[in-house]
Length: 425
Image 1 (tube, rainbow, N blue to C red):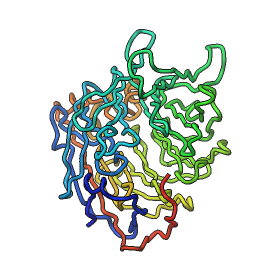
Image 2: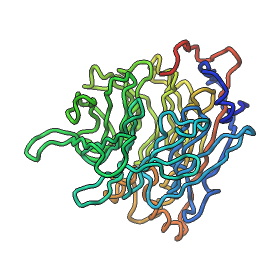
Image 3: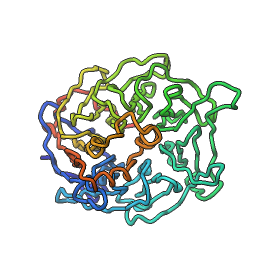
Image 4: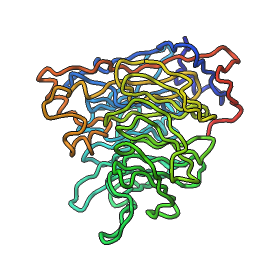
């Protein structure tokens, strides 16, 4: 079993070579943590998302009980957990791009909590370092549904309804944001309407970024820092009920990956021709829940879970649509899959809200448009319903575990036969 790297060990090591994965063998679970161990009000707690920090020493998670947690990997292959409970639903969280435990000044993350300003939070003690409020015309706080840093980490992009709010990280406070309105005047057609549910910067450092919405009529558009709200291009041929994630190939910045809710595929586009997708990777997803994917930072693979608990890995160097790895690693929906940046480790988390609400007479995946069409995509949405449902004795999630899987290959042997000579983008 692969020995996990601690924060101290990560700080002392030089820039490593690409990790060697063995995708032909069943992975071994190195660490497992059940979200139900943290149950308080929500008696059916489960993981909504999980992300490695830049050096892989810590994991940022969100759970159904409105709590953000940071799990630091210890030398004895265990987690040291710090919990930061939030006052309302968690819309989105994101590590600062250069966050490492060995550098305290960078070890922080941003969080968007319903009806509150975006906050930059210290990852060590949970104190708020800075706030970036967005206020609507009725003087209410707007919590964005998506967050993204530019490549230098100097600007924070916040996806709101019909607009993107841009903040200089060094200038927090009121009236500091620049609002990019994505819709035109009422009498003009066009623009990108709806909640901006996904933001992602192209890895070529050109300042180009993609914005996706839950609206089926204007799902994904490309923008640039130089052109503001004027789109460079629109993506055609998207399927599903609204975009949940956008990713890029780290070694080929013209290749873009897009996933949507209620969609059984991750679509692949070439930005030089966005009239139709190049291809797609198939997975099982018929719900509104965010089912995330991750692109290997070394440009070799893309991995995603699905609503059945199966994890798949595809080769993005060949773009073969058949998965090179496919295993049922959980007994419930897999919300996040993440490659460790420097070791052959895979991070997964599981759980789903459908088991908490599947006996409500009036609730299903298509009902309650205000909550499930807009709020259900939050990383911790609809807890109020979950709490009230539990009091009536409704079912628990089948599997609510956070796991790290060892996928170590033999020394000097990469079973995928990919060229690893290129450093990660």
